[in-house]
Image 1 (cartoon, rainbow, N blue to C red):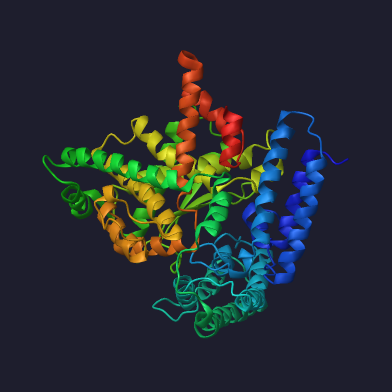
Image 2: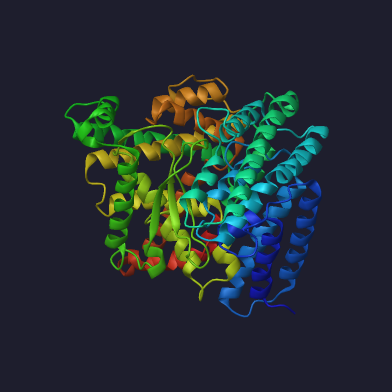
Length: 556
């Protein structure tokens, strides 16, 4: 009988076989020249292999606690995958952030560019984009024939991305940047240069064709209804959280969290300027030249310096940070994607470090009041510390746990908890930076309200002081966000599109943070004077990535 770890780690090969982009994310060699087969047949074949792995793992007997925990994590992971496949959601898998159109484009941000082999991989992948997207269109067409379609909003947003990346907007085609990068590299191979150029041109044509398909063929079939309804929402939220929750209770809790954070913002505004309202204080933070950085590269370097300094400050004092985790890269994201900062983890061998990506949206001036907290969220002690530390835990965790396992609730919950933690540790004593953290908390609280509200079609409660009795929709959500959080308008528009395209992901931040805070509070009550924060953090993170329900069980 195969041991637990052998089954779990063998599943890595299954994922890499069907999802070569995931292999690149994980840093597994041998797949960087391939593109996914997005056809319905490939999805069925993958699900069959997942079912076989689930059956094998369920019959495996753990020999120790580490294996028991790995087995539980694995069964949770594949069970959700099977449930999602059986729901046939893959037949309408299109949104502005996490669907194949974005995955195929963004993988080129992570690929090595320092050798002939690396550029052959890049050329090979660009050559396969047309076939890959054609298979994806076949899947979407099956969905259309069954009435399983996404919304007009998601189709329009995805089509716009295709148009930007194929050079139909103000920017040059994205894949032209790959040609420029080849010429800027140290690789001198005329035949390969011609191949890269031809492949880039074919990729541009492929994205242009994808955009045209979405506009002309798919759009007439798309639904005008943005929300997905209770059943689809509950399944999607379960996948992002790794737990089932009471949606109505969580919705009401979101209102409570927003009231708390707005009260804190009111008090903090007066510390920025005596007697100032929230809006007046934020106007100062947004307009004072002394409180901003001008220039994209200067801002990138400031972000890099902040990440590096935070790692130095945290190491050995508040956390034990493994040596390879002490390196992170701060980068500017390519144009065309969503406007939220994001993180990509390191490769398995750390030859590609963890990276934070900041989409500027064309900005050249960067008020820093909110960026400090965002840096803590994406870098250390947030995503980079958690995710890269897991990758480095080769002795404690299975390869499956280090590279694949985990949920948005666990990871995003930790990152939001990390923002609040930095305030507790004294790193947000400057009122400007504390206001930035609070505004981020307001955004995440609003997400809980509008995400559940829009998808379930809930009425706005009487105690809200905002359009009481009306049913949530995208316009009301945007108006509500503009009233309660203070991010740029284009970002908020992008956020509403995001929530409606990936139901349940937006709530994973606050719901995950809630579980992390409750677990810490429980440990404090149990241990009393014996509670040590650094020790608790180290123990909690050494459990590895998992769903929130399992995390609660393990920490208790």
